[in-house]
Image (cartoon, rainbow, N blue to C red; front, side):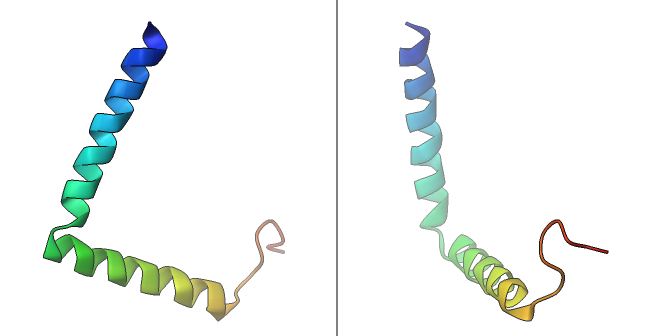
Length: 52
């Protein structure tokens, strides 16, 4: 029974995320976030766990 409630809540949260993702202002924010993440990956820096 608890698993059923967990799935119900998870599907509600997923539906809300999809609704928010469809809004134009949130799409722009997502594009900016992905661009930042790609720059960080390409930029180099120190590899994870090897900062000395």
